[in-house]
Length: 269
Image (cartoon, rainbow, N blue to C red; front, side):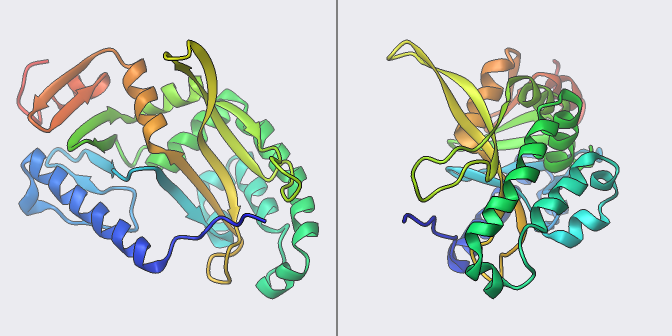
């Protein structure tokens, strides 16, 4: 049976260091390197002199948008005010508190997970709830104003509302399906997007992100993980937003970000 490898602590530390360096570099591009303060647990990686907050994403494959345990969903007002909070807790409660107990009953736990995962998929198929979920998870309900993607040494900046609207309008929400006899249906919520393979002249559905349970160790147990694929997300955003402006050598703005940042960056839009 194939088992997905968990990220080692050494690799996780390397990812955090790279995130810190990229955020610092972006602050330098904005001209606020001296005021830069990095908060690794916060959604806000950089805050400029106008009060705008930026989430800086780099990485080559995937971004972990959140990894939350039971206490987060119990205490978070936004999640509690929506149907999603209770559903995330239902997913978590499909697994016993003891990791050792879980190892003895993995199949039963996964069978129990099917029902809340199906309901979670059903709720996230609703436009308003999907929009809420994306705004909450990526931008902490508007606390962060811009998504910044570092790609091939260039920082690409997107206004949060543009990001949420594009993802919401293009995500096809499904439950996962078993690919072999060792797997089980309905263990995840999968966000698919339609892409075009120009070489083969065919349309394809590709996975842009997933919500899944993380139960790979006693340390990371009974946690809900939401991740996005960097390349597919970046290509989706850049293909759907026609207006862009190279504000600086290493800075490209898209859509609403052009007008929002024309004054702070001192250029005409």
